[in-house]
Image (cartoon, rainbow, N blue to C red; front, side, top):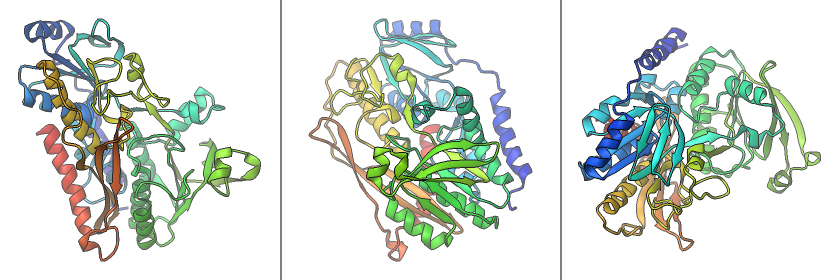
Length: 461
């Protein structure tokens, strides 16, 4: 193999070494309270992902007198966007490219960073309780991301089984050990199949991600001459994000290596036997009815299984006591990023109920927009939540489909103020000028790397 196993563990060692750095909060509860009294403008941000870090930087950029504290439970930043290229073994993509410490940007941009887990939020007292102290705020920003809903998707599974499957078939949609485990499994695999299971229903983080991962795993297997297929067990019948572009790329690049099975529902996984059982329905209607008598039952073997369960909103949103929709995502005050329930609580990133795709770029766009709204509110000004709308190319999402050479596809979204009262996105998957009539191109592959490099500069430099 071109990537030796020792190289993987060398990379993992970098993360392990960083993880044992003593976790010292840049601020404390008493310091945060003192800062609030000094300025009357304290903003606490829960979540240190794309949205949270962008918010912290933007607030300090717009008004240096605002006291900004970021609370994040992890001690290392790791990017979920672009991580599929790491799994796919693309040239010059290592774990180090996806990770960064939190302290450097906090010091550079003048905000506080606290490594802690939020345990309670009292919106009446305007306090956040954490494992590393209590923090008062004038404005609270929630950017906590997602959680997995294994229990909702597999109600018959015990907690022990869920834990076993989660470890054996890492989802790798929340950064950290899941990505390292999935990478290790790919590096260690023998000839055989990789099964990828996208979330079955509902809203989930980065809708194109499972299908980009499909291409990247096929790219890895092809480069390493691993005999086998990438089998996708999907409830959708081929109607997924960038579907036409992905299917064209799969067919052109991987010559039957990718076996997409639509209208399928996973019902069981046996990690001890490396077996997964699913029901195959004839169409969407019978799948929705869920009558197993209408389906064919299959059990297949796998070398590696990437089971991505249904997503749900982070429980931090529920802690805040703000109104949510049926999926647990925060209801917003019109077209703004302020919660419908409390004018002093804002929500950004994956946790919003706006009809815009949950992606890294969307989180950045939303954070910048919300930062302006917060600055106006702290200054006693009103803001126009519809200002600047519609926003063309508010979200640009790239998906790499090949590594030799780099080729990618893309989608752009225009965000607008929908008459229903929420922000909505309208997407377009273009065929690039250098694509010779195809959805993918080398130019888009180059743009994918440039986008990620630009995001890292924006967040950390």
